[in-house]
Each structure stands twice: as C-alpha cells, then as structure tokens.
Image (cartoon, rainbow, N blue to C red; front, side, top):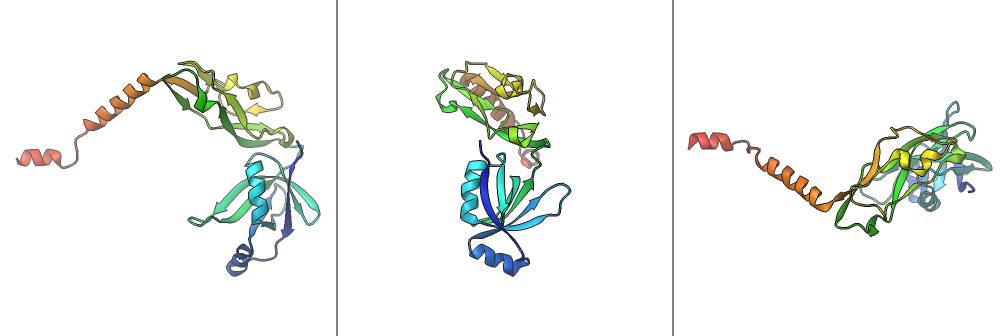
Length: 213
C-alpha cells in the first residue's frame, strides 16, 4: 500500500502570539523528530491533517512533504485543546525505512456485536499489541474475528495471524490472553460477590456512632 501524503511548510513562527495566529488561520504548528537529526518545525493544514489522521492513525507511514522533500513518519503525539475541538500541536516521528521501529498496533475485534454463543460476555484483555518491525511491514490494525467464539473460549497472542509473520516481532508474552468469552451467569455472580464484599466494609464514623449509643 502506498504511503499516505501530507503537505507541510517550514515554520519560522514561534512564540505564543504567532502560534495562535497560525491556529486562527486553520493551521497547526508541528514538528518532525528523527534520531540523529535536528528537530524540524513545520506548519500543516488542520483540515488536511484531520483527513490524514482518520486514515493513518498512529501506525501507518505518512510521507510529510516539506516544500518538496518527503519525510517518512508516523504520527507520534497529538496535543488537543482541553475543551475546544482543536488540535494545538502535532509531533511526527521520522523513520528510517531500513531500521526497525517499536509501535503499539490497535486490535480490532471483528463481529464483536454479533457473537452467536449467547448469553455470554465478551472480555477484551488487550486493545493494542506491542510489536517491532520495519516501517514497511507495519500493519494498520490487527483484526481478530470473534463472531464464532464459544463460551469459555480464549484467544491468546500466539493464536493471532500476526504471530506467524516472520517479519514482525511481538514484544509481549505469547501466552498472554487477548480476549475471552465468558458465561453471562458467571460474570453476574462475580459482580454480585464484589458488591456484597463492598457492602460489608464499615462506613467511617458508623462504629463510633454505635459506641456512643
């Protein structure tokens, strides 16, 4: 799959007032960080970045084109305004296409809302998987079909298709559970047991009140 493209410009504007003016013009101050190189401050279109981020997430390679020079990157960090729908700053991690990188790849459970074995409760133990590989071998997501799971089934890291890929190193225990399907009754009993135990804990002040009476 071809890398995703994003146009950018070198940024000379620094300081609060100048940066705020960029944001008012629907531009985002950003930077590209790469090992062994100086940080490259850039400016990107807020609209273009939203489109790219929806497609790339934090795992796909994004070619940031800075005035004619392409920089292969991944989106590393997004700084958002605490209550406005506004991105304040973006950090890109520059990557060498010939060097392995470590990333957290999101897990997508396919058919989660259509599991046939009912009544049951689906439990996701992992939502991301820590892996290491060359940038060109980086998967966008890890898709796991779960619609056909049966009660008490457990899917482990070693069961995933990605575990069979020689180009990718998984950086978590292969015997770690990814998801499981539990009987609904068992889950309800565990919740009731937890609520009962919590009810047995005395409220601070109640013991003294009883002694005074």
